[in-house]
Image (cartoon, rainbow, N blue to C red; front, side, top):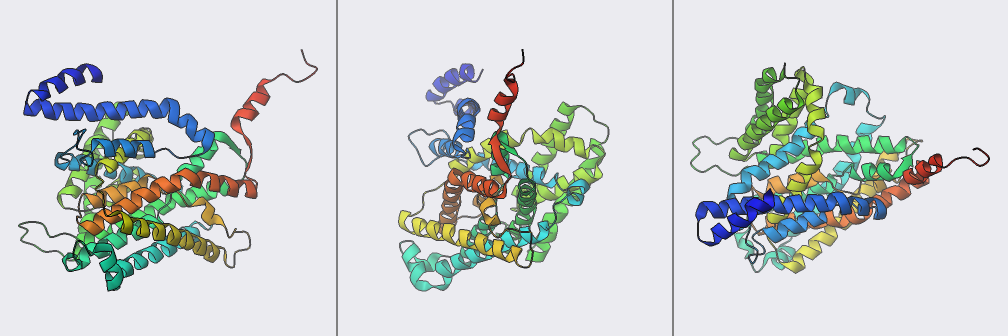
Length: 447
């Protein structure tokens, strides 16, 4: 169907019709995403399990090719009209994380979760954030080296501090995706996997909450706004918006037992919440995180809502990564490479230090748990995207590029590092396929 509409729409757009050109752009985007999804389903998923790498680079490259960075293709030349959709995709990730914060999750959390989560996220986040701020603002020599061609005097403290805050949050963030990848291939027999996977999920809540402070402390002034709010007041508005919308929409979710009806209702709710956050230049991640928390704990069908939306996580992540690639604007190469190398090294050092501090004084806790918290994941992509659509400037583009490059870099090798950790701990001993094949073979001596 996409091919049927794409060919005549493209031909008509070539004739100069404005509406037809917009239609062709949207259809081309949908067609590209559909083809990438089919390619991932039949090819990339197999390569993931075979070589233990996380997919995402191919979608990022697709978005980059469709975006304004490659004007020869000229599909998504102007992203202004897509910004609310980008906020919606980022908010969807926040809602899915918020719906995991029900009472059962808290009661069944692994022992020592708080200690592991706080230290493995605070130490690398603070280390990277402070080092970035020092290099890009405090030290004038480094600042001139990085942005001398732009004119250091044109840089604003708010922009540099916000970008440093973003890099700190992204350095703190990790993902449960490598655990899911390993569980799809290997037979997991120990408790360490579930413990670390639970810590990674709880870490998402912690990082998203801290990330929301960027939009409160460094909130851009709204054009024509008569009322200026303080950072504390913006924080109240950001959290209160999620609470109010959750309380407002909960009564409409009470008696609908249809999966399709629940899904459509949640699409409308997410669209409204993400649109409100985008209009106020707040974090759609935080607003929808609070919204999901309220719905799953208050609505009678809250648990069913979570189960309904869980199946949408992978398609939404694909759309989010494609749009992340389309938003990319190339910064200067040399300073970007320097900051990227420092980011990766300082993040690794922070994870190692956090592991040792978490294991300090605890006899049954390993000191190398950092090997399970190297991957970034969709929360990091959502944070970078929601930051990019609100803030602007050369430092913002540099920070955004560093985050995307770090995501690709860590996705290529973090699952193997995690596998080695689980092998050392005795959690991984054999593969699923081999055990299934062995069980399917008849025993010797039996008819």
